[in-house]
Image 1 (tube, rainbow, N blue to C red):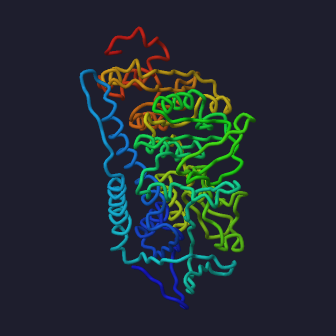
Image 2 (image 1 turned 120 degrees about the horizontal axis):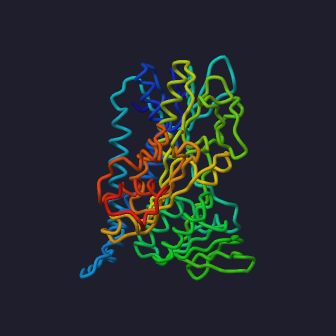
Length: 478
């Protein structure tokens, strides 16, 4: 139930500050353990980033843009087709309906019937250390045995002159536009920037990506960044790297970005500007440091491996930790933190074989170490790179964009990592993640049954390629 009482006190076993996946997973876990929970949320609606302004809206719009793009670009001879975007607002309205539906079904309805979970809408503040943990909200003081901070993050806005006055977009506002901009500048080239850039481009916006570093996806190896840059260029998306933005202004109804590229001045213009330059934590004005909770230099919450902060009885989970910012890790951490807090357990977090996906087309996906990370860890590796042009499924689908890369420990034949650039390449991840987690060798992958004309056969072929040239294999490789 909701609560907004003022000038009162209450007690609870666990006070959870936040309303996203980490907070809800913690509330469910605490309820299973029979604990009383007070869930305090401010800012984004219940459900947090993922369902409201992140995963759900972006992925449904990506699919809509993909349907539009593919209809206009058939890959088979003898077929002519086209697609017309007749009502962009209708696309956005359908997205809104999905967001509202999932917010209700996957968050509000889930906790509605739990008698020991109480919700408060308001901004929480931890009070200074005392014999009991105290949280102030709406003039009310909550005495909690334990506290979990799961307040998430928001877009980081760089201190660029003129930017604040420029009416820029972020992921929190871009997916609410009811008119498609005819042109869009994108600051940044991480996963939010790239997913959003491509979906707007496929709907019909002229898109230019401005990236400060020397390549997109600067944390990934050059082969991945170069491949995706090429695919974006093929679709008409301009990617400019080595950009130092100096100023943002408005002129003649357009946004104007003055920058230096390779030391030379250059000006970019567009109808709208998307800022996707990273994330910053929601930890300000919460009394955290006064309550003894240590933050790092960027304001992210510091925790140990059991998700305890530096303050006794205070835990943290989710994106506010500043690492592994995925909805599934947030939910995992929320449940783990609640279990540790309420049972006095000390179960450490474990991110072994953590998979991740960037939902561009082709998708970029990975698990474990890449070859450079493995080398930094002192592991001597072999690398197998299988172009999709050698995968029968891709050939039949007339879409051979990308590759599958496997990285194995040379001494043990154990898989230590994988990187994939491929349409629907994320669907290969779990086999590879489980192989890493459970010590399955690349020889075992190579000799396992993989149905012919599935994308999954790419894993088998890449594993075989450690010992045989793929050009010498028959269609039904063995």
